[in-house]
Each structure stands twice: as structure tokens, then as C-alpha cells.
Image (cartoon, rainbow, N blue to C red; front, side, top):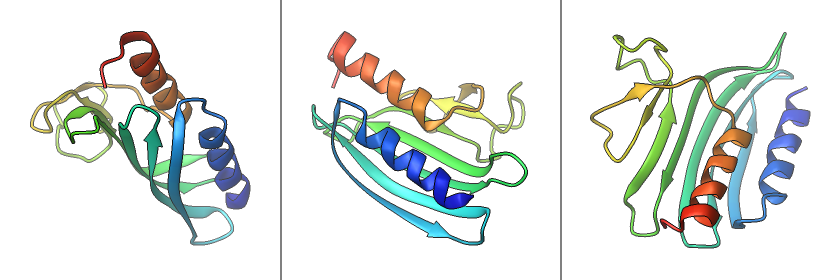
Length: 129
């Protein structure tokens, strides 16, 4: 179960055309539970730090996630996470930070595929990084 999810994550990263390289570690906690941590490096020098603690039984449930995307100089572009520190948001605990970790906006639960698509649009479409 969890090995299949790990494989999907690795294939998703490998098949994203803007990825230069990545360092991802997979920690199998049980047949259904695992922890993923790593960094994805993009062709423009920007990078994505990611972490997921996921349970595949009965459906994929991410207990914890962070997708932190930054420019090559370390400037935050965006960060999605579910840390419970903005309880007033309508999508609590899911939220997004733009350029500041001190402020957050409501956000639906993202997945890595959606985050990579967003990054690809930024790199190719706007050339911001």
C-alpha cells in the first residue's frame, strides 16, 4: 500500500519537465503509513521542500503536510501546510502562505501534483524565479 504511494510520488517528480533533481526519503512506518521528506530542485534554481505523513488505509489521509516553495535566493513564493495555527480560517487547518509565514489565506487541501503544476506555471508562464 504505502510503497505504491511512494512510487507514485517518485514518478510524479521524475516526470515533471521542470525538475532538475531531487533528494527524497521515504520512511515506511507500517504497511499503510509512511513519511516522505525531501527537496525538489527546479531548472531555474528554485526549490520545493516537502513533507507528508500519510496513511493509505482506508483512503489516502495526510496527517501532516508541508509544501514550501522558494526562489533560489531563499525568498518564499508560497507554502501550503496544515499546521493548526490559523483557527479562524474557513479551511482550517489547511492554509497557504504567500511571501510571509506570519499571514495565511484559506486553501483547500493540495496534493503534490497540484503544487508541481502551480510551480510549472510560475516558472514557465511568468518567469518569476
